[in-house]
Length: 245
Ligand code: AMP
Image (cartoon, rainbow, N blue to C red):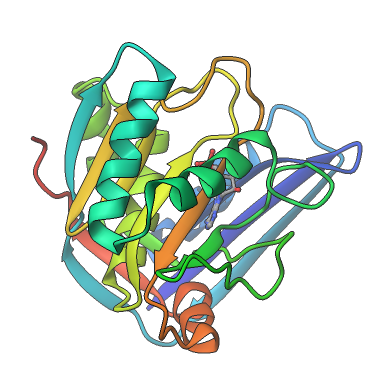
């Protein structure tokens, strides 16, 4: 039996922390406490525990690659080239959406809570442009092992969640590529995921920029309801990390 544990916390009405896990009963209490202790302080916290009916398994996460550049422009040009190859979208279309992520993609100029969805004709397809779509219900089967392994090799703990999300995303037959930058102003690594690869790229954003976001590049014949159902409702456990290249 597996349980989904989701935590989100806010302070002064603003989202400050969140996390989610899929664990067996033996880890349930430990996981709830771990997530409870995550934000240093908060006004409101929601912790939701749900027994999962069906869990699908993925044998391996995406293979992890790392590319370092000496400027944000060069790093993004590399990202755009990769995405263009995977989607056949023109550079200028991809660039326009990436710029939107860097400047705050929701109507009020804030960060979107979920991902933007762009199809191969260059159209935005998310149901709600301010919220975007969130990928949930995915985790590593042995999370502790994966965290230790990545930390030992100099990766940050946040890589674990990002690889899990990107691995689930690319399992969808509709998603061709993903672009991501963090909303942490200090965290400049971003990534592009495509074709079995999680490609970390540095520096994908300017230091001090509080904006972040994700773009899911999808086929133009996407059934958007089906994609949302897949991303939000189907549960996946990833058995192992991919290769580190
Ligand atoms: P993070 O990698 O947590 O720094 O998130 C970077 C940005 O990606 C956030 O600002 C959101 O816009 C978006 N995001 C975060 N989590 C998810 C998710 N689970 N699914 C889709 N988009 C997300």
